[in-house]
Length: 168
Ligand SMILES: [Zn+2]
Ligand SMILES: [Zn+2]
Image (cartoon, rainbow, N blue to C red):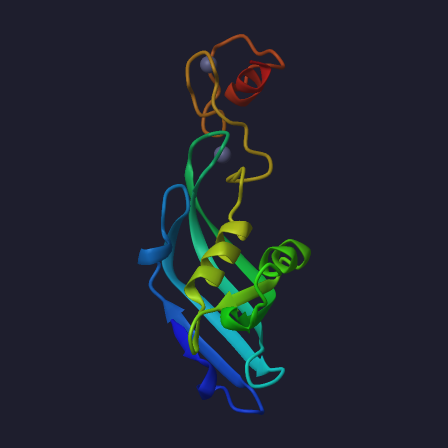
């Protein structure tokens, strides 16, 4: 999706659409169903644009304890300022970028919002997904899914695969 600066009226522009997850899904961030995007664009002046956005999507996750598959809905809200790259005085771009992480640049006469959406999606992706908070994980000795069965292995506090892995 790209939004032309000249298409944003003085009173602002609201855009909402659904995006197929295709271009955004990369392991381990696989999405189920479309990504819902809502953007509110306001012009500070002819060239500076403020975007207030929200994204919602369903991540297809693998539990970090039991490896079971489950779906995790996420919703992300963000605010991003866009200024034209051409207006940036040479030498200052780096300074501004490191000082204000929500400042973005656009080339030409349009804002490409896909990269922005991608980065906020990935920021909201669960880093250590759990199917449930109380997931019991897998037995490290026999591999049984302890959510579904009790295995005959001796139970110790470090019985879970996860605890063993963390011990190394
Ligand atoms: Zn689990
Ligand atoms: Zn076992």
